[in-house]
Length: 538
Image 1 (cartoon, rainbow, N blue to C red):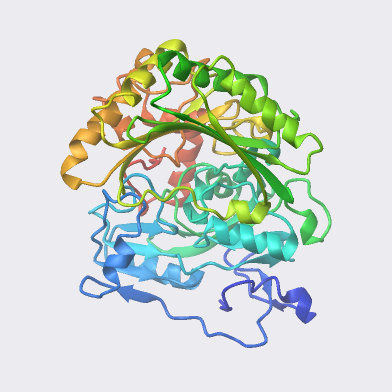
Image 2 (image 1 turned 135 degrees about the vertical axis):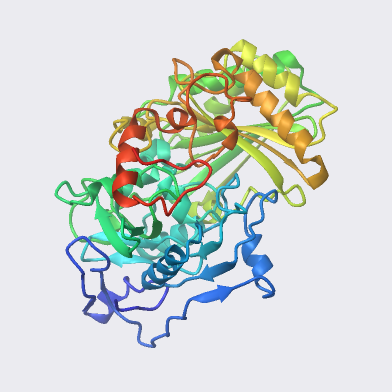
């Protein structure tokens, strides 16, 4: 397989006036991308093997977002091409070494940094982004971060994908889990624009190979594509490349094949101090926020261009913050924003400090709001909300978050959802939650490893009590719709915390799980790829 330079290796074709066709194994397997080489060729590095004792080892094994988990693999393999991934996977399988894969390092639980992992494949150097004229789609290598993807797509072609709001997240795991962010109400989830995926898989004989699976109805590998539209990372193989194109997009002009972001954003915030809030005011903010989203989350709403997060920080954090942004090119953007902030603050006696600013879209999008500093040990949980929390749940949240004796930095984040994301059928992608209005991310952070047990118990108890009516977890009903696999939570497998009788697989995948099991049986029959929340063969 021919190998090429890193960034933009596809996008230079038009400028050079020609393309170089790479050989294909078959019409859907491995690599049939038309590409061109830069005027100055840069040799592709060989794969690196970094073992304990190498000064780089600690950097590569401690790249995880959650400081509670640091892997101890026999080696970290830094790879640069799909062919190198095939070779590393082949070697690991032949030697019986358990495999894990890392792109951006943002897994919230210990799925990658598991002590049982012997070969950690680090794809963070696979960062190329460019237009592939053969597939009329944008190719993104799975090691690229969201920030790099947003910057390259926008500066080169004026387009974007509706992915997450943390620019340092790696594309590799973000997309496979479903992917959502600030533009999902206007344009759907990121997987709603996924045309193809390249995956290194292992067959029943233990042979590794690269396969490209597309959304084309005639593609014999289509089910593998479908499994990567929300089936979660580390289940079927090693994703090396994605291709994105909006369904129904026509023509060959790259600028018309993905959504265009707003030129500018109007950003606003309302901040309440815990010292000013009582139980009634806290309840009013949370209740108003849920009611507003229930009334304004239909596709085509005037608020389709609005994204917000209500950050319910605890007393140690000191604030409750509503942070919002809206397409500033809308003629009534300022009025829409004011009405939104007023609706959430209605009836709240405590004063809120409001701020407002405008910013170019890319500048605002590349800011990272998620650096927790020394508070780098964490526990996270997730939930989909079909309607706002009820009075009992809000009272439970207030009781935990207002506790002056809890010193962890905890926030329950309620992210806007709905809109265009809810126009997709639950089985059209592997991500089945398609009628919710909010996503919740429960998080708590602390700095001291000696305090792990106390903080884990606190978060486990909070979540269990919020969902006490459904066995301690958000079982799908009129109010809840399970959880989001990109907020992985191994507690859902534990009967101490999940007393609902509903298996964790159903909470994440609902009725799509049996289909995912069949894909697993077809494409990973030996179970070469597995972790604590793995899909098992059906």
